[in-house]
Amino acid sequence: MSFLTLFWHLANFLAAPLAVAALLVLLAKGLVWRQPLRAAGWKRLWGEAAAAALLGQIAALALWGVEGKLLGYALMLGLMVLPLGWRLSRA
Image (cartoon, rainbow, N blue to C red):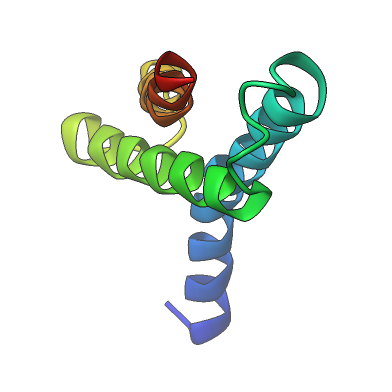
């Protein structure tokens, strides 16, 4: 495997969790729960959601041995909303 191939594999592995975390934060803080989440910064919310999503992606890869399964994406989304739900429950 060449360096360029490795780079694209890693970039594609990271693209889904990072992009979906950005969409989640945009929808949550920008449109839906603007007032309860006003104290939390955009970068902080995105960092928490992205870290949880990456954890879910890595766990799915470890559990099923392949990336891109629907259950893996469900696990990723389930873990991604936990930090946001925790922040909303404290507000």
